[in-house]
Length: 89
Image (tube, rainbow, N blue to C red; front, side, top):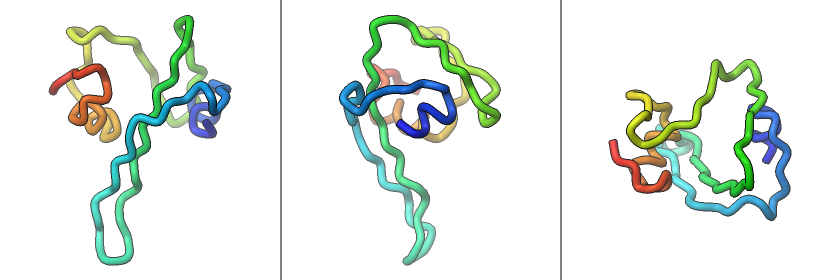
């Protein structure tokens, strides 16, 4: 919820989020590992327009055949795990 507010300007209540999956980060060494990825679903009744902060350069809504060719790591993992409607790379 904090990340949605900070990075996209969206204020949501916990009851509107459904947890999909947690993906543990790979181990860098015995005491440290990459960060875990947590995936949630936010159901909305109308299309949202995020107010992005300085960490982002843009956003878009895509159909399967209009997806960009490259994704960031969280999106790539979500696609590989089938968390985005069964989209495959």
